[in-house]
Image 1: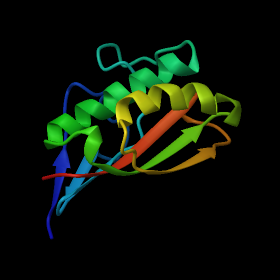
Image 2: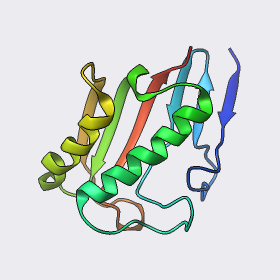
Image 3: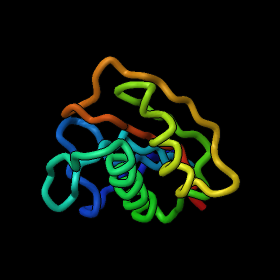
Image 4: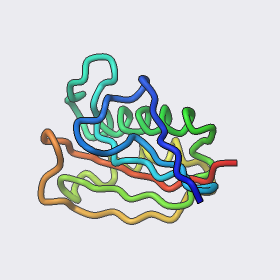
Length: 127
């Protein structure tokens, strides 16, 4: 099985030795996304909902670059700066995942990059 690196300019540039996404076989593994604006490279600050919206848009760009979509997501991992953010994050996340959501694990992290409130990574089927 070969791996294919997925890159799009519609998602913030990586800041270390990792890829926005890696396709292996018919699966795509995304890097964790935080609320960085692709146009400015700076954090979108505001509510948990606003951050989650940017995170989901960043993930959507990676999925599109790989030729897939949220409906093919099989596993999501959500990291929160505080579990009190759960309901607000969940409301935005749910709009993207539809009526057949993936399996998901949600953790409270001690700290997220750049003071982010939300970070999400996905495993997605690629046809």
